[in-house]
Amino acid sequence: MINMHFMHPGLLWLLLLIIPLTAWHIFKSVKSDPTLRMSTTQAFDNMPRSWKEWMRHVLFALQMLALACLIVILCRPQSSSSWTNTDVEGTDIVLSLDISTSMLAKDFKPNRLDAAKDVAIKFVQDRTSDNIGLVIFAAEAFTQVPMTNDIPTLVNYLGNVEIGMLDDGTAVGDGIATAINRIKDGKAKSKSIILLTDGTNNTGMIEPITAAKIAAKYGIKIYTIGVGTMGEALYPVGIGLGGQVEYSMQKVQIDEKSLQQISDITDGKYFRATSKNVLNEVFSEIDKLEKTRMEIQKHNQMTDNYQPWALALLLLLAMAAIIRYTILRTIP
Image (cartoon, rainbow, N blue to C red; front, side, top):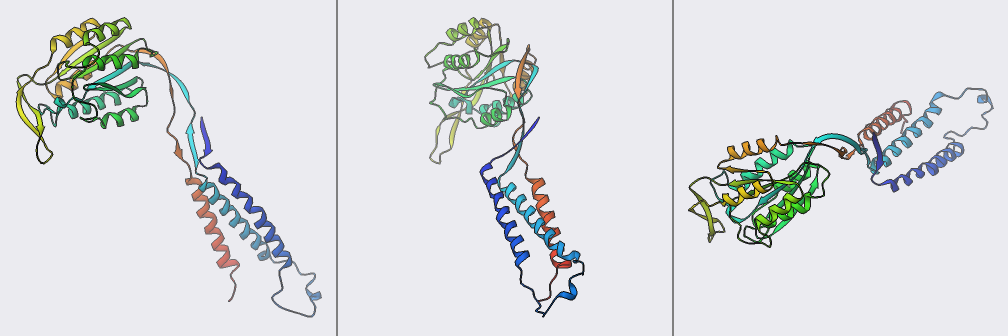
């Protein structure tokens, strides 16, 4: 159902201006002075009134209607659909994304983080029935987006994730724990955490294995993705004089054993993404995970609905101008 309302309803009081303007028009019509003085008008008493006299009132009515349309436009009429409950097949998912400096490594194009973001955005855009959250972590973890089915908002935040938003480091355990706090109270029976990292846990308050055991108690599956090619890759090693990131070839090191153990504890699965194409395949496989039937609320985005009023305003002004400069045209 479509709901209509005004952003500035207080301006509707301006419609009261039509009352004194109408009163003034009536007063002016009755008390108007004659333009030709004669000794008597008795000879014209039985003459019918000209239809042009009534056109003056039609012209005034058109002008008042145009004024009313203008006031309505100033009030910004808007329309939005009401909330509706819909039964869909979906799941609860939290994407836990590593944003440590090593994610700038160039074994993915243009780098690991941007490649992961591109694939993740495509992934969430296709899951309109799921509740999805976003957690970022480096030396600490932070909830970037709580659980939501507002996919455009999620995509916007995901696209704005950058290296340097958190202190550098790789707190895998904290990234998992923060994701658990976001998803554990979800309504869906199927709850999953997608952990995407390229490094080894080296900081944080919670050990990754401990966090995995907590997730298992809540029935949350963790799908771990190790990002990085086999062998060597260009790693960021510092900032040059011009402010540019400097790189050098280093051996790719991912704690695959721990990531495999995390996924095993939670009945999830471990993936090794060695390129963007493989990363796409990983997310495609995750997209096939079990779904549960749940009820979600949806509504359409609010939109301005002034166009019909603007069209009516232009039409009324055009009609008034035609009457004023044709039928009621006066000689100077």
